Image (spheres, rainbow, N blue to C red):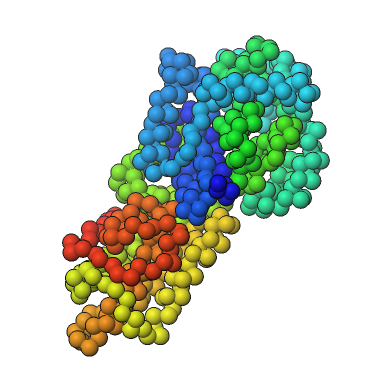
Length: 508
Ligand code: MSP
């Protein structure tokens, strides 16, 4: 049995509108981490999915004249197609409308009610009758409903509450004793100073003002409101409340990746629910930044939305994946534009990686008919490249363990750049003119092929399609991390000229 397990999740996305590049961002990063762990011998469970209930979806469906389920089904089919185009290797896609989830959420809600962590009381809020929506004071625009601009009224509604306040002290203690729980650290300080220390209020967890939600099993006038439905997706998929083998194996999660605006729910409400259920807490919640366009959020109404499949079709899947993983330090906000996608693709994928692979294979074919083995005619100049290649895995491991994904990629590209420099320094085309230098030339090409092989094996986690092309160019099939430092005695490259991995994109 493999006792190295890794459970990683993305947030479950609202299918209220088609997914955009911001949704792809988290999912690509989760996918790269999941792939990296799998290659490293972990038994990985990678989960994503959709958060389908709530007033917003109910309203949108009504506007379209369809049921909420019909409305979300179309968006989810497109989302799954998008994940397929991006090569997202999820193990499970959960929908909060899945029957098993609905049933388990009801059981969890009842358990919390029976043990006194959920109680019935009254919710007071500002209500807009035509929109059937509750608003907080701060959400109002000039004192009116932010959606329709009409008056709102103070309304009191019967509701169930979760005793969040009871967990304030325990949460603070948990943060104290588990410094790795919230990352980056700045987000932890924000949670402590802005939310926990000022005092936690109990949380309203049911509504009677709309219907599109999971009914409270013992009081079906109420639907379960948002967080108990959404957050528990991470455990219902494993079978909880039943203590299934999957649950025992994968829970607690190792990593919840979430956007910065939902860190609060994942590091305050979620651990409090788990504490109430007497379950262990996830190892880490990582709050990342947003991809923004022209300084603002991506949205259809702003007109800066494009179906991400258009980028994939134009620039290729790995250009999009590489951009998401490389451009922005994970944790910070970053700008997305087609120009920066093109610049990044040309600079790294085309000029460094593509160019290196095609030059090296072409030389191997031209000078040695594609058969290259290590003739061990070494020179000092080889050491820098060989050492950098040998140290690469542990360097990338270190970066990945801190989720410094852009730096992990940068380390790999550093070696690829060294390869290009090694070609310039060893000048194979000059060696080729001298018959006595034949073995030296073969050693040079061999060293290049070996470094490319190691880089391509590591790059599989990030740009898998490109790695596959390199493997077929190098005709190698031993491509797991265990094979990284098992030397290939001979390369048999085949005689066809390699296709370019990346065409240079015109910048206009
Ligand atoms: N349904 C909730 C999450 C529940 S998890 C138990 C939700 N859904 S969402 O669709 O609004 O957002 C899902 C995730 O997408 C969030 O982590 C959010 O930060 C992320 N992104 C949405 N737009 C984004 C960008 N422009 N850039 C990066 N991530 C962004 O919240």
